[in-house]
Amino acid sequence: MLGAVWLSLPFLLPVDFQRPDLDGRIRACSDWGGARVVVLYFLGADCPAARSYAKRLEELSVRGEKSGIAVIGVAPNEAESDPKLREWQTSTKTTFPILRDPGQILCRRLGITRTPEVAVLDAQRRLRYRGKIDDQFGPGMHGARPGRAHLQIAIDELISDKPVSLPCTAPTGCPLQPLPKAATGSVTWRDHIASIMQKRCVECHRAGGIAPFPLTTAAEARKHVRAIREAVEEKRMPPWHADSRFGKFANDPSLSDEECRLIDAWARAGGPAGNDVVDEPLRTRNSNEWRIGSPDAIFSTPKFDVPATGTLPYQHFAIPVNFAEDRWIQAAELRPGNRAVVHHATMFLRPAGHSQAATQGELQSFSLLTYAPGTAPLELPQGMAKKLPRGWELLFVVHYVTSGKPETDQTSLAVRFADPKSVRKEVATNLLISEDMVLPPGVRHVETRSRVFDRDVCLLALFPHMHLRGTSFTFEATYPDGRSETLLHVPRWDMDWQHRYVFAEPKRLPAGTRLTAIGRYDNSADNPNNPDPEATVRVGQQTSDEMLNGYYDFCLAEQDLTKSKTTPLWWLAAVLAASVLVLRLHRGIRNRTAK
Image (cartoon, rainbow, N blue to C red; front, top):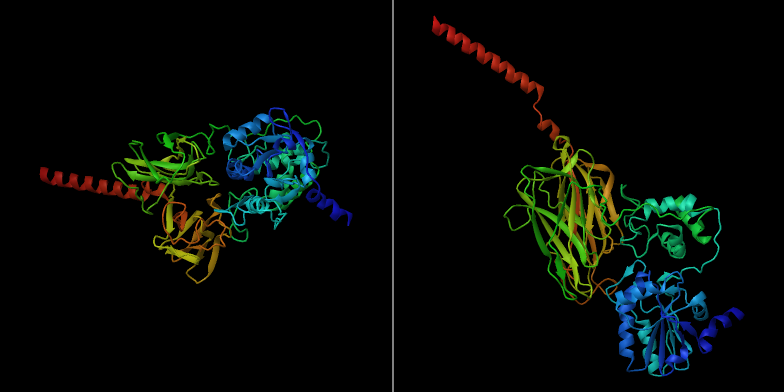
């Protein structure tokens, strides 16, 4: 009974506070005494969800000035410095004031546990709503539109002198960072966690990486122990979307049960560093290093100016390479110059002077490689390579998205070449594609495309691609004897993380095997990623269109190019014998003529 009363106190008693702003000035609740409604927006500079909602809160702040609504940012994470918060405010273009919450006292007073989370105070400064802004953004969630606009509904009800219909909702953002305190435990950063982070995490969680914060030192990781533990427990991190029941993949970053146990124990203990630890950063690549190692050649597009707003057509950049001989590509990596505006990029090949990309080789390879968030570089096994024919050129096709401000990008390709004498098998990328799919409003749909191999082949990798209506993707093999096997199942398609699933061992498919790509789509309002449930959707390049693209890398199972590049001994012997015979006949004819 006492617990229930205590939990209800924030909703009964007026809220007062005095907190420093980013300039060190003490700001009191009374400074906003004329406001009919005060919205406290609890934010974290390292929290992607808080960044996603920043524009919405800024619009509310500007719009609310005329109607007596004040928006105040509150930064509860003590490890985030004032300069870092100012940088966050500049990059998000927000102008509402930001107050610090030393000791997270205001958070505890109001029951705040995450960022972003809002607390709405009425004219008497009583708490009338606490929780999420809406259900559009959150860890593992990036909806095309909000469902119930909890914050706006609460404000509208207060302005209309109505009771708030839903006074409390469970937030879904980032856990508050723990307050500084001594951390002790038998599982430590030095002895257990650093090696896991090195292997699984720092490729993204490093300076210049795609993750929102680095995890290269014990101190950095300790700030985020709650978020780390939660992401690991929910299997959101490291990101991987293949169903573990089907296929074994070389690039699967999933944590083992023992690694999960160690992270959980370490996080519950507050993230102890270990005794006598010199907190040196883990080894990471710098911004100039390539994941494929030292490249043999780098090719770049011209610098391209991306406008602040609008929808851009795909941009095509043809780069002549002028190789006098065929080149064999062992590894390749596409790197955007500005990840904020490069949605994805694909590298095609074409003969010089041609206006379109072209397939090449006996297997009609469709493309060289693709970059998308989460996609690893192309690195082929020894003895396998993709061919860049002499006289052909590179064709960069880049899908740009706008960020709200003018941007510039220069995307680059790095390649490592193989010794032509060592290449046994030519690798090709083919595509199972739907070119005539139509999704009426509200429909749930399954789209399939197949091909039958007329020779034995080895599959090396699978790469599914869909857009916002896509919900799941499956590759299946049906063998000549009638057996079926699921090669890859992605039960929850995530456009923000697109993996190239590389088989741990090449998957041999005998002649007569049918390979099928199966895409499932939801064009209804039940799909939170659907930008417009009322639209009829067709195949197209833009995100608002849809695709079924099932890329697969493969080679001929029995091919050995090294044998065709050398003259067989039996052929040399035959030529030598024929030469001797011709010479003897010639001598015989000459001797008879002389007589």
